[in-house]
Image (cartoon, rainbow, N blue to C red; front, side, top):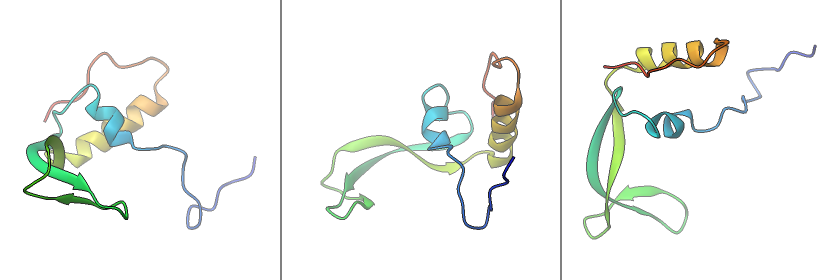
Amino acid sequence: MVQADLATKSSTLFDLVAIYLAFSEDLLVMKDLPIRVTDDGCTVVDADAKRLHVAVDWHDLGAFRTFLVERLTSETVPKTAPSA
């Protein structure tokens, strides 16, 4: 088996926080903010934009990392997400 060079390659695990948010907000600090996406793709707070419910920080990043590793390496799917 060929080992990936982690200094130059990325895993194929895309937006795990978005997936987590589909079933839990417990480990994240959530706020309702006016958000828009600029023409060049940047996400910015804009007082004239639509208010969205967004994650802005972690309550417990370590717990998320532990949850993620356990979920990815488990033979069965855990029944619940961790709580902050």
